[in-house]
Amino acid sequence: MSGIDSNNLKAGAGSGGGTPLVIAGAASGVGKTTVAAGIMGACCRRGLSVAPFKVGPDYIDPGFHACAAAAPSRNLDTWLTSPEEVKNIYRRGAAGADISVIEGVMGLFDGRAGARGEGSTAEVAALVSGAVVLVADCARQARSLAPLLAGFAGFDEDVSIAGCILNNAGSPEHARILRDAAREAGVPVLGVLPRRPEMSLPARHLGLVPAGEREHFREKMELVTDHVQENVDIGALLAIAKAGPAARQPEIDNPSWLGRGCGEPERSGGARLAVARDEAFSFYYVDGLEALAAAGAELVWFSPLNDEGLPACDALYLGGGFPEMFADRLETNAAMRESIAGAIAAGLPTYAECGGLVYLCRHLEVEGRRYRMAAALPLSARMTGRRQALGYVEATASRGNILMPAGATVRGHEFHWSAIDWDGGNFAYKCRSGRRGRCDPEGFCSGSVLASYVHLHFGGNRAAANAFVAAAGGAGEARARV
Image 1 (cartoon, rainbow, N blue to C red):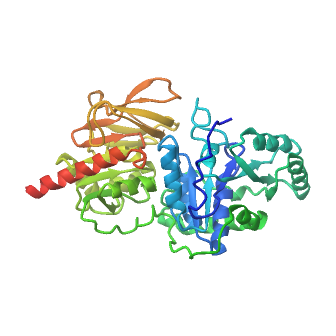
Image 2 (cartoon, helix red, strand yellow):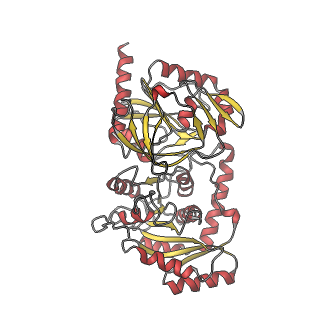
Image 3 (cartoon, helix red, strand yellow):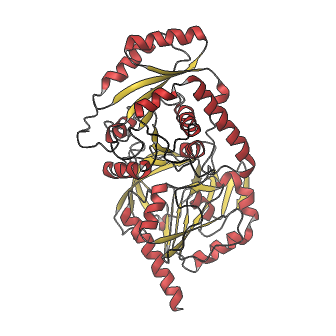
């Protein structure tokens, strides 16, 4: 049992979108993203405005949601932010929407390693009083589905399982057997999806869909929506969610946007923070960007792939992404590389995460070929062909930097396939993770630069957001005096 006290955690009521639907999995890889995106798309076709969410730190699935729902998908993560901030993020995202759809992470009760439900879909469902719809992959299962569903339904009294969606039925007869098994377990069946491998969504990338793939991707999302709409009782889901009539039609037709107000930013008069945003750099938390704006930053988008140089700015933020997929184009854009290197050498406050860190290195080696990067750091990166890190970390600052004082500890997340031979004299953090079981030095920190594999959530680190914007403001004032 999770032991979560949900008596005073009724964020769902009165927050917009009725009762949130939580699309959970019996395990990882059961088809949650396909089901969730299809439900979002089907609701939009009915004229409903959808507020999408993702449990956990993932950047990829929210990209699918944004395309399906024509709205930004927000992360609900009780490790990167506090449970109270998760409720706040949910309320902000759900406000004004007709229905909220939350895609879970891993299996329903799977959370942070070694923790009792912390970070799990079940924990978030309890926090927002969500109605859980359990997705099960039934490709190799028949009547054994009954005890599986019964076990999930009875495991945690704080988690309400409203029904199930059964994926990968092999035939109409298989579907009948599965429905009978669910009836034995007492769990309503809200849909049975026939086995169609072509409906699975790619796991490669999606923070921004490259222009050449965008039309193909939209076509794929239409097919996914058709598949779910034809085989899932959307009306029953809307009744469970108590979704109201459409308040408005979705206004955004862009799967790559990062949040309301995150198109062309309004001129706020605050410190100008240049944010890399294109096919190569797209991993940002919507609420993290909003926290920077709330701290006084004016967000100015630019493209390391396509622009000739940095825009006028007081600080630079290079988020994660897939620079290895665009290494040749990043190398070819020498003007941008030189612009960034020159600005950093001149003291521009710069924060880079994961893919952004790799871009600031001298070189990036991909399949034996070395590509020139920005050469703003005395480091080189290489793709290794295998995952180097995955999971939550606690990062303690080895020295004072533009986000925090020496000794401060923040929570973050790592996921990368590249490796860097660090400069031992300029480590940014000492990182501890449950997987490694030890404390390792990591990252680069020198002067006004902080670069690391660690992804932070500024919505859960308001002090870091304030410090970054203050550093940008101080740099801007110094330049103005000159």
